[in-house]
Image (cartoon, rainbow, N blue to C red; front, side, top):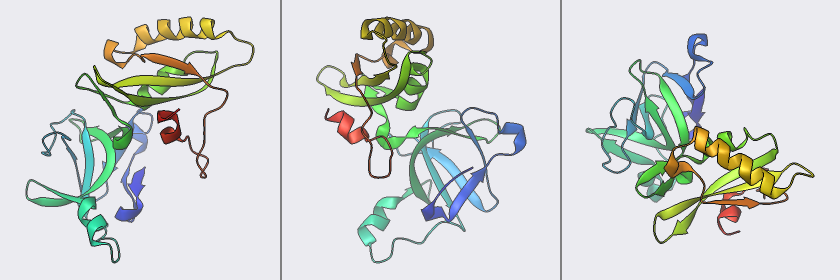
Length: 205
């Protein structure tokens, strides 16, 4: 399932027939209209094309109490209809199934390409000598942003060995523009008070 507080909890759910789809999050519940919006043109994205997931319907909030500025920023009008912005990137396939790709704020734009850190993290964890990892974008004068992966190595494995293994894995599973420009080793990933990875701290590390 998929949802957020501003839409009264869940509004997209997976039947068993699609539950095993690795990035499929399901179909909208009745009376919920879900589209994806091209983040550059602010128009509805084509089927299969990545865009911000937008939702409208009976479950969507009217706004934040006594916060008109935040309310205005939470909504956008596309095709004459007012939608709630989720801040998530995904796509809708030809069957109407909604797929999740990444949080919008985590997306990296390098040389004009949209890069999703979660995909690179999944590939990085294919390396048996990686305990944990996190991917961030760092400012780059040539590309706009560059991909940097922070790796927590398993004990007693030389960094040089892990780098060699990762480069082989990246060439096999990633597009050339997705391959991290830097592999940095770290003893442990920084965490927020909610025990989630602190990506902001890594961006400034």
